[in-house]
Image: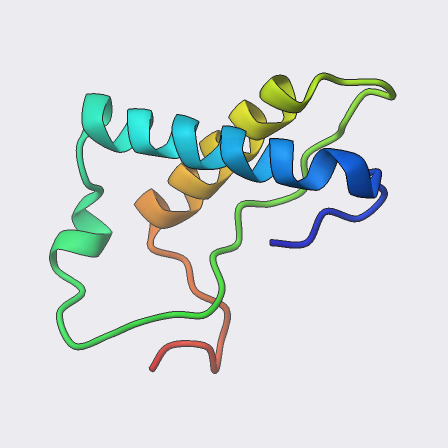
Length: 85
């Protein structure tokens, strides 16, 4: 995950928030069909798009936004060209 412009002190807090929120989304909303039927494939990249971050945003809020973008990217099944194994 690339966290461009995020202070180093917040990176682990954001990563923990992403993990927690993404786990919750997968539990509440289920595993996207793109993963269920992706047998034999893996990817290094999920394009969740750009997320505008407000200056001084709390780590939990940033993590929640990132988890939502990751989940949407997985659900769309979009993998950049050349990144599918």
